[in-house]
Each structure stands twice: as C-alpha cells, then as structure tokens.
Length: 68
Image 1 (spheres, rainbow, N blue to C red):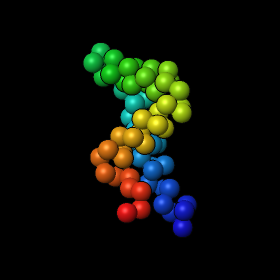
Image 2 (cartoon, rainbow, N blue to C red):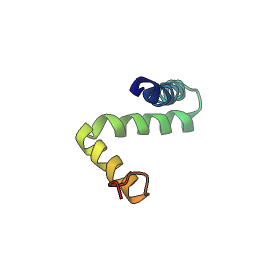
Image 3 (cartoon, helix red, strand yellow):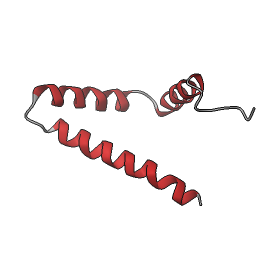
Image 4 (cartoon, rainbow, N blue to C red):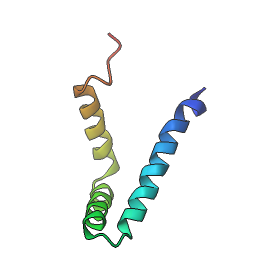
C-alpha cells in the first residue's frame, strides 16, 4: 500500500526534474536563469533545513495536522 502511495510523488519529482533539466539547457535566457536559480537554491540549502521549511509551511497551510 505504501508503494502505491509513493508513486505519484515519484512521478511528480521525475517530471519536475526532467523539465528543470531541459529548462537549464534551453536557449531561452529567462528559462535557463530560473532553472539555474532553482537548482542552486536546492543544492546549497542543507537537506534538514529544507525538510523543516516544508514541514512548517505545510503545517501553516493546514495540510499537516496533529491528529485533532
């Protein structure tokens, strides 16, 4: 059951990664710049900090709940 729940996330991550990769090698300077900035931001921020940021953002938006 957990493998089925993970498939949409894996598919979305793969699609975003492929599109970002194509944008990075694009001839369009705006697309190349935005893709490079996004890749640099994710590469230069430690993983633990990214997890905490996503956790608190999703909690603030009400996506995550504490079981109440």
